[in-house]
Image 1: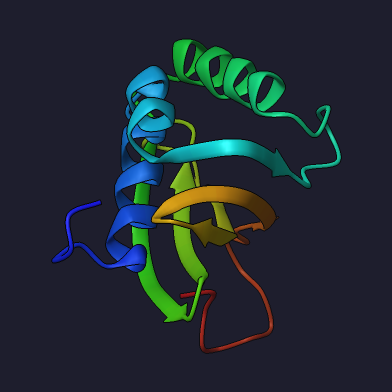
Image 2: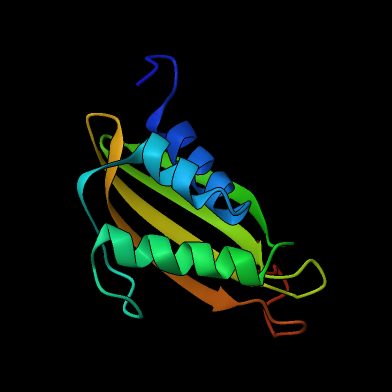
Length: 126
């Protein structure tokens, strides 16, 4: 790991590569041995999530991910993003939680909620 690269920067870079369809590169550069995740829609191993990310990228080549904020606390990083499968879609507010060991991602959680066109909260989702 480049000592000038924070874990927060590494998490954001991983998400950027994955969203851009460069899933193999994202995993090679940032995922550590024994990686596991907690997305309830896929098996909990690295290969299953990697395959799902690659499939999503091929189905949505214009996908965008706009990081709104990122927080780092020890070996944990949280990234709050606006993700759109297609640029014209309202998208979703997504939070990815990462746990790092030796500068590599070893555990990942993600939660999201669709962006509402209109809602009662005057502050919006971002």
